[in-house]
Image (cartoon, rainbow, N blue to C red):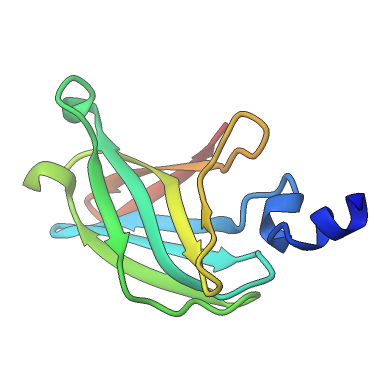
Length: 132
């Protein structure tokens, strides 16, 4: 009976690993560029990051979304977003949620955390630092 119940749980729900690995991030004059890898077992159909600036902490968070996508497992992808709130500055990016190809919605929890990425724009490019 327990094996039958275990077989119905999506594969990505079993592991304690975040299905999205942050690879790098840069900031330029117009926005941020984020590179990540799908480290899960299933393709990702929707992906949402929480993109927060220091100025936004009191007023909420910005959303960086890929609503209709197809990110295959093991592949590295690069996406571009404008600065949250339209103001250039340090941006903290974290996985907020994702939907796999089979419809399963995954969100980080205390047991299944994702790393965050801190992206600071600079004159000659940008500096990205991993945190947590």
